[in-house]
Image (cartoon, rainbow, N blue to C red; front, side):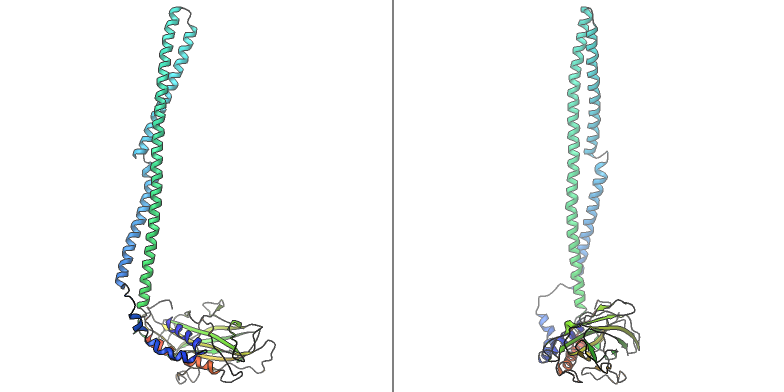
Length: 428
């Protein structure tokens, strides 16, 4: 979600270099002219045409593969197919020739027996003539069988060659189909990216909405190393209209007492809801929807802060805000990052009296609309910012932390107003 990506950057920049952050506002305003110098991109219509063409090519490739496989499995083995018919014919001829040779060989055996049984010269002469004729017929039958076997072998080889050629054709068609699928996928992605980008063009309906608030409760103002603190984030739609998708955001950020060492790696912020009961890490740059939120209703998100046992003493803050997106494409969000400050004590320390951390809004004065209570949103997301905290134990926490909220407001309001329109139901 572009609004919160800007705010996430705002937190990181504000706590380290607020002057740089504030100077980023004009640059943000100049974003559109800079983009106009880029090479013209294909229009949505052209990309849709490319998808249609790629779809037709892919469909044709799929049909070609299926037809080729069907031909291999059915047509090529049909008795009427030329090479298959030749195999059947030559094999029958080879069987006939083999039978004829067997009979001819038997005739030679029979003729030889008669010659051996002849007793007179006349009988011997007649038997010899019969034997000679039988042997000649046997030789001719053997030659015929050899020729028939050769033709049958050639026919089978030709049919096998046809099968191999068809297998190779199928392989080539499958490769062409896969290439067509990739081309189609690429075309669809290009279209989706273009539609998403078009949906983010400046001049959309994203607006600041200070009545979309969140309030953190139960976060102690002191945390001790090696402990886990559970608290709650309440997201409230204070408007008189339903918000179709609401995205809370949050982050935790901390430094040691001297303001020199960042302690974010020692802190783990997690969330869960009734719909998503498993604990998950919070990520400021990517929102998780809590679903639709009707006018003047709230929803609670459970949060827990896990503190490493070896964390040094220091100061920390939980930042929070929220956005919404409607099905008609309208969108907006709370135009600031509220923060809740807490003191970090080394493991084994006695925290003494512990109270709830106070929420501190940015520069936007929305206490009148929130019943005098400062609020902060954090759905299922959170992460860590960057920067420096100082003045240990100050009731105002560190000036740099406050700057983070105020500077984020500068960019946040601009981002909300100038943010690019998002399509209804788009993945925020």
